[in-house]
Picture 1 (tube, rainbow, N blue to C red):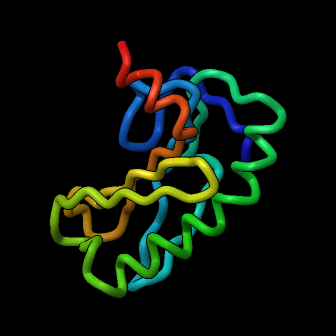
Picture 2 (cartoon, helix red, strand yellow; picture 1 turned 180 degrees about the vertical axis):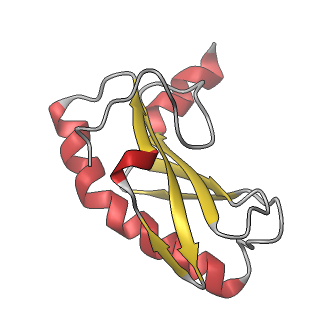
Length: 117
């Protein structure tokens, strides 16, 4: 997952945070599916950050699937969902697309440094 790098096109919600991982997931009911060709990395992660992201990404998927079940995310509504795991932020929104979920994941330290600027 973390080897993806597509500088010509950025997937996900945000491209103003670096480093970050962005993706467009496919939603079927309350299940989410990751497609590697619909994902990109902005900036550069350290080896340690890549290791943590690889371990944390499946947990974010479970959190977002739970949010779909609870109605916190809805395929018909533009509603932002945020959660934090293991020192990483995840932002997700369907934008009412009836089948896609746009996601950006980035280290908490990156968002804190952007807030200070």
